[in-house]
Length: 601
Image (cartoon, rainbow, N blue to C red):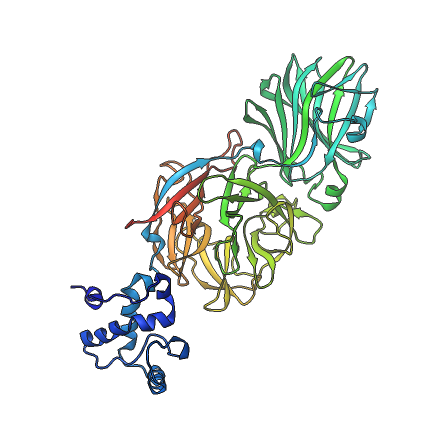
């Protein structure tokens, strides 16, 4: 018979309430007969030490002060076998101990997958022209003459038509400007050839202008116009033919990406990429003075007796063409942050290759798969720019009462002529950055090796801040563990680097013990020990987010859940499938939900 069964044969707790078993007083009372039996079975002599120091508040029955004093003295001089006895007590009774479990004991099964591509239900509005609700167009959306004759604007049956009796270029003011927003014009129809209409981002005096226009011919959109003016001087004027002309109606979509842009046409809910351009060598729209002075306009260029009709025009924060780099928002000690019954995540909103993604915030009710786009976070280093850094780990520091985190300076790739390298930056804000458009102040973090994909915790047991990050090394970006007395550094290396090319670091507790998780190019989500950073194995994933040919540098994101959810663990990951026709790029991906169960269950 196993020792644990022998020890517990015939033992029953005397507590009437199950919950009382975890109280020290109850444990001392209920386990007294068992402790005596333990002494007999192990032949250890009289067992005079309770598992907890005795006091007036936890003595039950008729006990004298002499007995109390004797027991407390015994605690100061424990029996030589007390440690073994206490250990046996805790490991043999599940009601009295935290279940020992590691991530290797969990099997993850895929539940669902989805990719958010400019999801209209998820768009966060910034500005909008809606003819069906406009009352006084001239006041709400004033006309901005540019050249030529007058453009006449008329509203009818929920649409707006711009027409001209002679050549005319003019614009309607729609709203303010955000270099990380998406700007849409819904075209319903047009008359005439060689007319142009679309999105203009410009200063009120037309000193600076960035122009993206659809050009119409033979009752179709056949080409695009890309034009930039800086200081009143034309920097570029380019006509780009469409491989596949577009008939009416369709959505003309300009996705701004800080230092670059994408242009799409959407029909029947399907987005087709038709143009990509960078512009920071001509004008850097991330600069605060441009953000504050530019405006979003509906621009038309019409010849005699031409017209164009639009259903609406809007600026919004959007989900982009894919999401990646998933990490749960936490508290300072790495514990799960839940609010409104939802988990909260940082995910990159994707445009195309670096530096064009940006830092998004999403939430999820972990009992279902209702991913919700909540906002965009950008970072202010005090250099006059708002930066779309990403791969961030954000946490709420309850002691400092401040939102903090680490992010990666991918935006440096958009700085023309810069020799600065991509490194990890700190981020902080007194305002909750989870909603809408948020700005976090950012500062450099001193850390050996160049890193990315950081995950930060305050380890209460050692009284130190610890960061697991992928550091530049061999091979690729192996996971490395760092330590500091301060959350924003300086940090020193204490373990690693690992021996595999990693990505998407995570520190997570299982059964009261920390583990290091990260993705790889090896078709595995690795599990390493903490803090030694020694290999232990890999997550057991049924239908992982890749196949035999796909890129597998995906991120693990495992979260334990409290009782009452469909599974005790979830994992949220992504694939690395790029959006069509972007060439060499990183627009991934689709999002994958997994439920995790211990293998014995």
